[in-house]
Length: 78
Image (tube, rainbow, N blue to C red; front, side, top):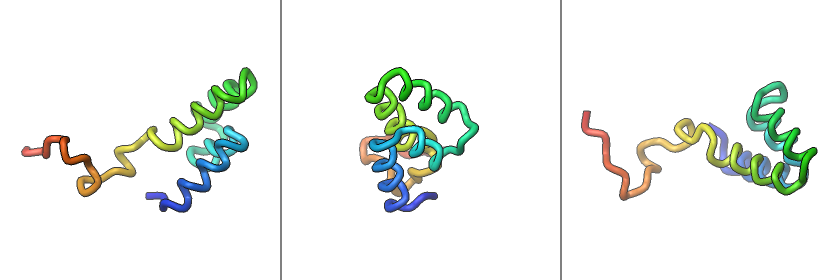
């Protein structure tokens, strides 16, 4: 699980150079990186938005465990 400092650095890099932030987060030869590279070539702002989405919200099950879930979410009773 990445630390808060690592995520913060990835977000700063995603604002400056979106594909680099995604590369550090998910790897260089992934679909997320290629989509971010394409969006950045088409327009800088769509690349930033996609990079921030990928870094912060993609695979959030890995980063948010039971103790960090919102209060309104029902607890699993299985």
